[in-house]
Image (tube, rainbow, N blue to C red; front, side, top):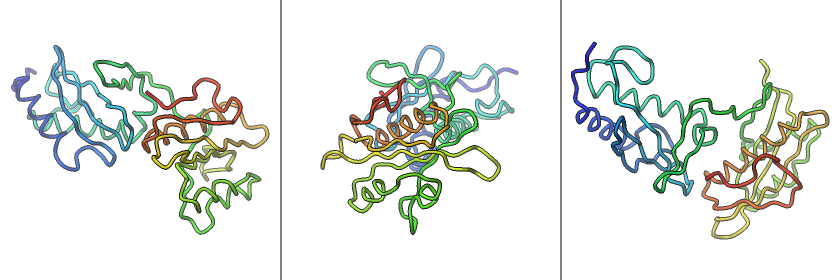
Length: 240
């Protein structure tokens, strides 16, 4: 079936949809939509990350949703599904997992064949810092939680993340990592702690470090330092 809307209409609909207040998802800030020969790039900021990110959108070859593949009946409806797809990608960690290409002052994120954020059989999430006894379940499992709790009390905690077995009951917990602010300007973060229980695969330790570093970048850190030996062998830097 032929498309009845022009590329100009599609471009205008995407720009209108993605630039409105509250568009896409929490943490997304619209910057621009630019045309390319076969599509568009959506430029946006993510949380407090200093990078400018981009997401490529191809012009449709048929009147079908770029998100669900179902028929759509207008450029506005098609643009709304571009928004839905981008929201889903961001909610599932696009900025952290997407393959990156630096182009013209922005970072193009490609979700195709992107690596999983979590090691097979495990999941990583944030430790609620305002719980009555934050990390008590980690202490029960045999992990050291005094340092992250002290960082919370000092107002210096950037993030505290935990790893657990991806099971029906969500556990047991097997590791955690924490980062702090190194300077008053909050441009440098320090990876303070990466701990896993004995027998836990080394990939879990690396994943904890990577997630903590990514969270520091999303909080606005320009760099991450650490005194921990080999916390994440394959990558230890603020994502760029």
